[in-house]
Amino acid sequence: VIEFCGLELDHPIINASGCFDVLAARQVFGEALLERFPFAAYVSKTVTLAPRAGNPSPRLWETAGGMLNSIGLPNPGIDAYLAAHVSEYAKLGVPLITNVMGASEAEFAELVERVGEREEVAAIELNVSCPNVATGLDIGADPAGVSSLLGVLRPLTPKPLIVKLTPNTADVGACALAAEAGGADAVSLINTLRGMALAPGGERPWLGGRTGGLSGPAIRAVALAQVASVAERVSIAVVGMGGVASGSDAAELLEVGARLVAVGTESFRDPAAGARITAELASRFAENAA
Amino acid sequence: MACGFGACFGCVVETLDGYKRVCIDGPVFDAAVLA
Image (tube, rainbow over all chains, first blue to last red):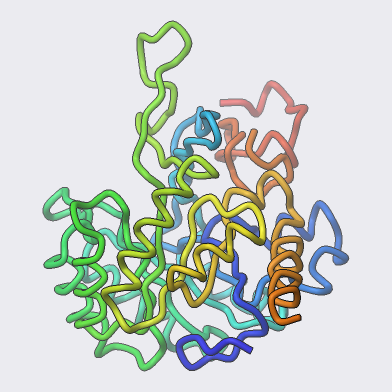
């Protein structure tokens, strides 16, 4: 049993936000995939105040060892999420972590207050990789932004707050320290790295959103370095992620100080990746204990 | 295509009723609904 933000989790493997859609998986694979839910907690896709359609196509580009995505966080908005999705996710039998994103501190505040009222929600993850509409800068790209946001949000809910740090910053450790000082219960990293691809012919960006987020095994070395750096500097729990595709990948993030490990892009390639990686990790622990 | 089972929302096409996923809402669409 793993203690995380006051929650007791069966094992250290969870899903990365946006990378495991319970409703889609059930529609395609039936109840069997979900009967023994593979993750120790379920992290929702990012929810915003208003519904979002997402970015124009094309949304994906395959890279060496990974992919770029410019999905654009399509979601039904907070009203529909609370009315229809929360009760479905609560049936999974694991703690629900709701991921929210605002384009301003006021939007974040409304989201945290409304999500915080729901007893089905065990913790709230803050996606701060979003441009602030007032400044154009990513809210979580510097320690002052993280600090200011936590100053607004921390008094609004007793639920655990997890700050999903952006790797697109000069000093991720300083942002993690700002989250800790602001009262965050945990930090999670890494989010995708900003990247770009040109369309065949090389005349224009391929992705409809122009740039996208790089994920997959290509970013695992960056994840390991950033998680190690953050874990050395904060005493709150760290959720490590970035290119994890096997139990040994997960073990490395745990080794450098992560409390939990999230599986992201690998679940697109293999929808049963969560269960496989959890089993691989458990057998490593069993071997080491023997 | 990243996943092929409706989870990633990478394969959408624009229809009169918003973006639809080719993998599970298609792959065949009535041409009249495509935007």
